[in-house]
Amino acid sequence: MKTLDINLFKVKNTLEPQIGRALISEPLSSDDYFSRSVVYLTEYNQLGSMGFVLNKKSEYSLSELIPEIEAEFAVYKGGPVHPNTLHFIHKIPSIPDSLEISNGVFWGGDFEKLKELIRLNLITENQIQFFMGYSGWYPGQLTEEIDRGFWLLVDMDSKSLFFNQNEKFWKDQVKKVGLNVKSWLNVPDNPLFN
Image 1 (cartoon, one colour):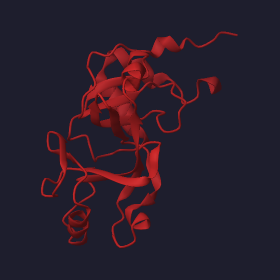
Image 2 (image 1 turned 45 degrees about the vertical axis):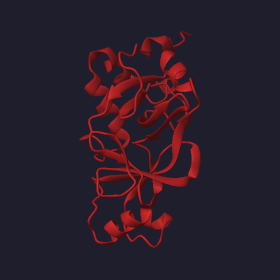
Image 3 (image 1 turned 90 degrees about the vertical axis):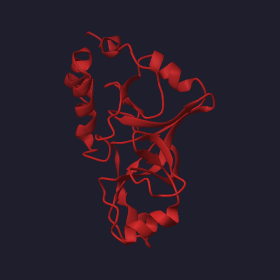
Image 4 (image 1 turned 30 degrees about the vertical axis):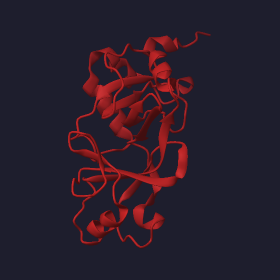
């Protein structure tokens, strides 16, 4: 019986990690959170790295988690770290205390102001994304994972954020990278069942 050469799907990154870039998981990742995921980096420095999985929708809506907010915004599984916390990225510069990540994409901000804007119907789902938990790496861990070929770094177009973050989102991002990772699209979810 032949064994699958997993190195066949490893790629060499041409970009360095930085906030505002995305990590695309290699196709054979068996981790529940990171299997076929796209992670948006919101922090990368000597203290570690942080980001949010963009394409793993949870079973909850925002109003189910925070009943005083009457909005059915989807909530995504941001990662395995502190899954009982709520985070958000958005394109609303008027929310005080937001941190600009890149190109008009912001992280967090004044939650009371956010609730008011939602109550007034001044925020749409294509402007904001909510996450339960986050993805985090201790110093050097993410770099090591990138060097081992677990992640492909890409520039994330801010227009791609907040739209169509479903199971197909991973494939769409891989297609944008081009020919050097086109083979990733042909890998079944579980190669043992092929």
